[in-house]
Amino acid sequence: MICSIVCVLWYVGVLKMLELLYRIIWMIRRALRTTDYLPDRYGKGSWAVVTGGTDGIGLEMAKELSRLGFNIINVARDSKKLKDSEVEIKKTNSTTQIRSIMFDFSKTIKPEDYQSQITDQINDCDVSILINNVGANQSGDFERVPIEKHKEMIDVGIMPGTILTKLLMDKMLKRPKRTAVLFTTSVQVLAPLGGVATYSASKVYLDYLAKSLSHENRHNMDVMTFQCGLVTTKFNGYYKGGFYAIKPQQAAFGALKDLGYEFSSHGHIYHDILAFLMRFKIKFLYNSFSDEMRTKSNKVLEKLSKQN
Ligand SMILES: NC(=O)c1ccc[n+]([C@@H]2O[C@H](COP(=O)([O-])OP(=O)(O)OC[C@H]3O[C@@H](n4cnc5c(N)ncnc54)[C@H](OP(=O)(O)O)[C@@H]3O)[C@@H](O)[C@H]2O)c1
Image 1: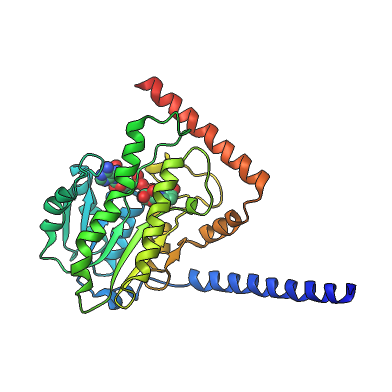
Image 2: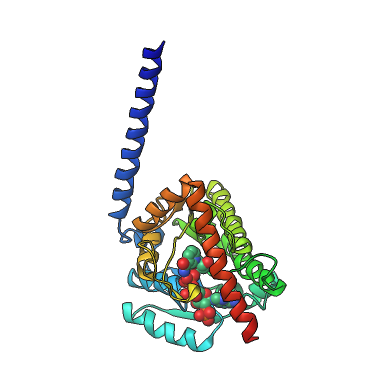
């Protein structure tokens, strides 16, 4: 009896080791991919729409897509930053055509405004890629975050991804080549943390939307949720701590190289490792990390309310 229990445990152990080995090989293989296949897959000279492409990950995605020969439609809220981004993007490829659309997702929430101010303006463009990148966060305990900030996280975090995908999808699906929709979500969809409840929930919404859409229209559309880890950008006050804090260029490249291959990606290998650790949810480590995050974000919130 004891012998057969040991035997079963041995086989389970071997299977687990094989699974771990497979995961490590898969991570390394993915890390070696490049983005060079994207123009062939979606059509060189076609257009990529990027929301929030004036800074951070969105700007780097726009630059990488421009380098590969895609034209760019940049939708963001600041006219000066839109102009500066045009210059930045052109540096990667001077022949790229760029359309900048000023739109504040926190102020304009009606679908008909999305249509008249964004999609009607680009009717003549062969849009092949939609990067639903824009998002909003106000960290802090749920009850301490002002209600208008909760609303902003919903308006900016959920509406653009849903409405723009809906408005652009019909035409994108009629293209002779494949098309792609990428949703920038977060590793936080894997494990809920304190201090970022509404933000994480908005990312879970997009993550589910992406995964569901990736089942529909599989034959000609690639949909991917980009479960991104920590990236040093304005979004988090240029936080640099931890091995897993990467540059926006690394995050953008990491995600784009997986488009068309994966339904779900963490992009950079450091974020694969981070996600691997998060999945274990070792309770005492996890609780202390969550508490640390809450304490930090509540301090930021206190500072903000004193300034106002
Ligand atoms: N950074 C991270 O650690 C991290 C981790 C996981 C997921 N993400 C996600 O990655 C995405 C991009 O974040 P990021 O780190 O690149 O942030 P970022 O550097 O702050 O860039 C955000 C971009 O979105 C634009 N934007 C923000 N609010 C907007 C609004 N209401 N209307 C129109 N445009 C708006 C910004 O324009 P302005 O510059 O004018 O504000 C900027 O172009 C977000 O969805 C975020 O949730 C980030």
